[in-house]
Image (cartoon, rainbow, N blue to C red):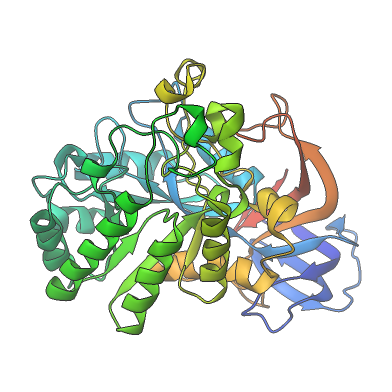
Length: 425
């Protein structure tokens, strides 16, 4: 709302880069910029005032692994419902993976997404397809996609068919300054499995998708990176072994990064014992040992970013026997709430914001926001203590395949700003 003066009173600021971490301030926003930030700012008659006593304000988060579904699967999600859900969760930037229909492998599809989201509160950045139709075989017009504005390359949830394909993608793009995303999985070890291979899932009779399929492929792809150069980013890693392998590769100085899904940080394969298909995600939830290793990997900076891995599915695709149900869960609206409800005791504010505000943007060549005087106002205000239930009334996504549907979540977003657009949620 251009021209409006919004005064946020007595908010506790959490922002590692601001120098004001954990302190309480008044923040005056004018025409989308932080005009002033002080311990106390007098109220004027033309100010819209928000009483934020007891609330927290953070820079707008960035979710670097989201399925847009639009174009092609608008019955699951469209770009406007997606950005609305992100905004409601305090996520002011997202990176959309290219598994749309048609696949994001041409300038016209990139421009369609950019145009469709040009006036939304949440900034939408596009990952271009690394291979045609995401089949892992023939390279797309990678340079043309860069010129169109993509911020990286991805093969979606499809593995690269062979090391030679990945080598060519990395070598071709290493001078672009853009990361190549990888869903690392050795398909010969998967066999259409649905759950982790562990003592917990053994007696369920469900087909397994063992961790070895992930970490053996990560090891092989790191060998390719070592040879080819470039920037390789592993998406949604899930196992302790994967963390250890990536940690050693980083010590070697390779240009490597990775992210982890919020659900893999918060939950384990025990959730699958109730056969709730909303907990059927890709890769599958692993053991408690793996979960703890992922948390530790985040804390020691082996893991760079936390993502929602937002994946909208039809009800029909989820209302099936577990082995036949579709993979994935929505989560862009509740990224912060899962942290507040399940992970607050294990992950500090600085660690959280580094992984959801700063690192995702830096990895994609974007400038992270900071709550400082003179800066563009890119921030979210929320009440930590207030609880709310995710249901038909509160959900902003078109999809409902959320593992915490109908459950109480901590942390209610009250206000989001990204430039001249101010939204009271």
